[in-house]
Image 1: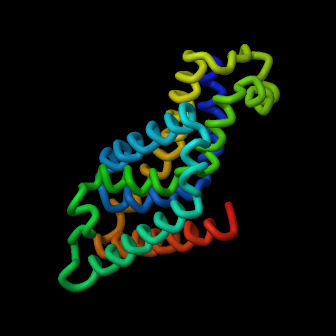
Image 2: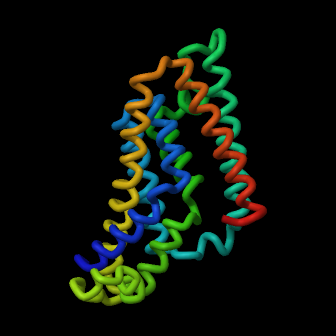
Length: 214
């Protein structure tokens, strides 16, 4: 379990650095309390990585990722429009409809689930779970110091799940902290407009990825 944990933590954590989901969480953290964003992200991440380890590509075979990308993109654009409207006039200081209905934690959870389903970090988790020894070789100089884990065992699967989830979350916490700092320095209206632009751009890119690939 220990070797599988280290492999998954390092590889998935590195893969997540600079990923689009960090920008999404930065925008959420500029509007909501950081701990709520971390909790929402953690729920989504542990769920996503469990799917990656246990189910692999089965769901993707029945529900094409292109459909998920279009639906997610439309949701992000709608959320962005509502965030922009909340920055003007009567909407000043008012949360967008999805947040009022579900709360910040579930809103972040749902957004990240949609954004990351089938993304490279989840696909990497699937490949690590399928063949941890192959993944170990990508670590290069670190490989001799880590004993190759055995694929297909419960301990290896648990190690990959925990390691990939915590590596994923650690990378995203950096974005959440940056968003919290940004939110503390900007007026509420500027935060709402910044978030709106991020969500709309994120939605457009997500929809485009359904047609041109990522």
